[in-house]
Image (cartoon, rainbow, N blue to C red; front, side, top):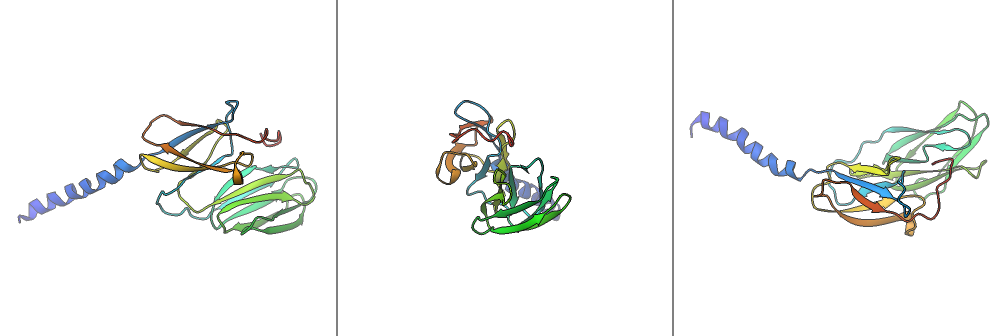
Length: 208
């Protein structure tokens, strides 16, 4: 075989092999609303069965301000650390009794912070032992295909592939076992996929 022909053939063959893989890459855009048509924010959406590199652990921050946690819902990759920073003029005592992510950060005052690592996938419900009205949620993920809905109820999952994809949707007020439901969607459409959720009640004004 002529050396020049080999040099030309190899890049073309590599491109041909890459084309099917590129064609399969697709994003899924979802719009979440409640039964009244209002956008649902802070919903966690995960695409099951999507293979990809696990997200790397990172550092995150939740503040205590005006006797509330900010943000109300935080999504973090497995192994990530979360800093709890007190911006209130009084002390907080942050804790979680959730399986796999149980912890307790004893009293700390204004300008102080404490950190904890979240190593188990799932939901960690966060509270303050001093102020019962305070609540937040850390959702720990081990998959690359996840997202969180914004104020418009929109969430985009990157590179989930084309065709039928199973989505798991979680929200602290979702009327479903474990505050979670599963639905199958078709990602072949280029339009945002509408999904209506039934919520147990209106979310607290302090968070929404």
